[in-house]
Image 1 (spheres, rainbow, N blue to C red):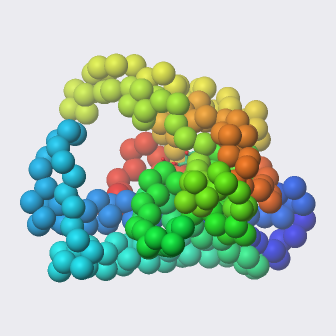
Image 2: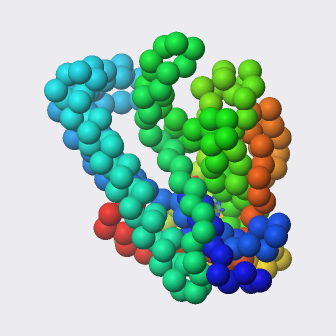
Length: 260
Ligand SMILES: Nc1nc2c(ncn2[C@@H]2O[C@H](COP(=O)(O)O)[C@@H](O)[C@H]2O)c(=O)[nH]1
Ligand SMILES: [Mn+2]
């Protein structure tokens, strides 16, 4: 690492080197467990039906339940920011680095915004805001380059309500990748498509130091980010390309009581 004193934060914790050999620390987690519990509480309280094809529960933002939901969502968002900040600071400390720039972005969250003179609640599922000049971190995979990008003004950008992708996206489900095993008997119900050897081979070729990770997170599970970003080239500008150096994530048998 040429500049040990400089460290940039992107919002997996891997760390990367950019095109000028500057170090970036990236994390990708938030409030999944808390968010799920919150949503479940409000769905039950609002009398939502259960099932894939049922009508959605609609709560008015000015109803007591709606206002409480928004307050809880905002709190869960702050909890996500705080957790990411803590992990980035800890990785920077371990690297002996000083943080010189921070880029935060949520996904799977709702924002109150004005578009074309209309006040809207914009829910970005698997997407992040990318208003002109707004920077964001978009992950590839543990064995692919990631990017720091910013939104640009264009017809396409406006049509997307100034949103972009938050990752390359999956080509297979977690279950398809790792297979299905009977937890009690250990019997393999369906073998996984991706083996540990395949995952190891990929990261070794890319010279990435990997700690933890199940095969459901292997690069084989994701699209290639440059191809995805090519489809978005009119609404974003790539500022930095980040090459992964080290990636740490929970192992396949790790117990996470918070599920975040
Ligand atoms: N830089 C990294 N990006 C990664 C890694 N594993 C996945 N990804 C990308 O991020 C999103 C994660 O999405 P989610 O659905 O799990 O929230 C995904 O689309 C990938 O492209 C990684 O280890 N490093
Ligand atoms: Mn995510």
